[in-house]
Length: 312
Image 1 (cartoon, rainbow, N blue to C red):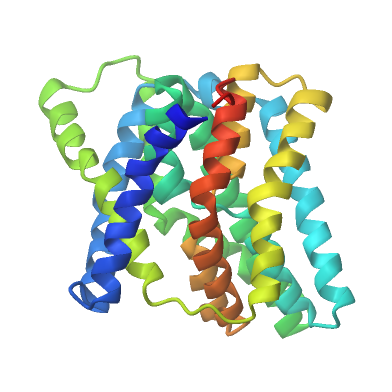
Image 2 (tube, rainbow, N blue to C red):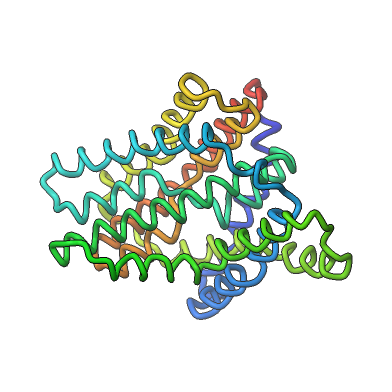
């Protein structure tokens, strides 16, 4: 366990450094927004393109993998929805809470960290998890909120959803990378070097930006935030592990990446969605803050378990 903790600590130390910079106002909210934009549109996109360009579609797409991950997500999503409704809150709030329970910070934290900790072979599975989160669950929450507000679904929303996916740089960069990989050609050396240099900024930039953005989050509704953090950090990886290891014939090495990705803390884009729809942003903010802090230990434990290094 200790060797894994020592490997994960530098990643969380970067988050902590960003948090300090944001908390002390050494890094302003405007600076954090600019850094996040740079990472999102440039550095992380370069990293994702480079990963995808060196993978074949068969290395990313696996129907058993998708089935196991979606089944695990569905169980925790429905549980979080049910508990929320039993507390008497609205369906819209319940949907946002369910989103917190299954959407981890795969893009900014998972991709850079898991590829380093679990090896280059983790790139394909972690990109698949990222794609599922972006395509399936971002679409789902938008459909739910639209149906609740308009009282019906319209064909127009399909176009809006499609356009949204086409504008997402993570989806675009992965798609372009896979398209390049189908040519069977290596990425030209100057282009590869450019992408390597730019993508190299993704890991420190993303982790620092996570921490700096956490500095603006407030810890309110602690009981609910604690429950949702439990869902995300414990129940989600446990459910995914059950389906990946006991129900679907997922390759052990791919299952390990999937479970580790499921153990990641709540993603910042859930807060952006909550703000956009005007539904429980403070609750989501607290959940992101708590789950990220606690994940220093829980992610370490999960990675130690999936890699067989659970000893002290």
